[in-house]
Image (cartoon, rainbow, N blue to C red):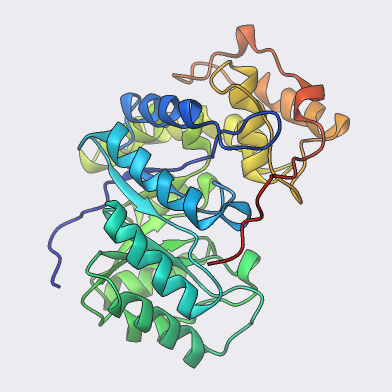
Length: 325
């Protein structure tokens, strides 16, 4: 299928999956959180991605997250399903099911742990993209997968009609420019601290963790860049910097985002599933020190911040493991 335009949006939230204290998905909390971030300016939601704890979600939970997202968004934002699998056959089946569940697009991560060659990566992407009519975002995050998508591989897979975009979490700006110059791919910043620099060299938008907490400033940055107003975009970028540092520096982004959202009263529990655990005392203290520097960020008023280190401690062991088909 040939896709035209941008079916994803520009301000995409890499959604956390709110959970109860015992590690089960908090479905009312999911609905509220999706509605909150859309109301604050997000026009795309990536469910079941890294930040959504895809590795410990069951396939049934992943598909329900798509269905809930579609229902809550009601056309206000696209719903992209992330995660996938490091087994090609499983990834194909999961994305087919996600399409049936109503997903607006898919984000395919480089197969992790297997450490495939570039030929294996290319084959994986092609077979998954062949299996669905949905528009595809490639997800390049070698820090988690162990293997980068090489420049030449990007050029080859970019020729697939369903592959429209790439999420970049490598931070190699020269490669971003090369790909933008030589393909029609849309680029999405996958590094919260580099959103404005990526946009400045031609990126389409962002898929952000910190946007769980404060989507509005990212909306302002994107809108300002679209209007050619670098001064406004830079001011928003600078205002966001300590919040990005709090969310992305000391513990995994999922852990910090849930800790912060719970302290703001926006989700019912900061719980994550094992092997992730909540921040230790010294990590929580560092996060809170960074938050004390946040000022004037819409949606991030920490004057009444009430973190609960006890509630965040440890990690949950869910009733059903998140592995099998």
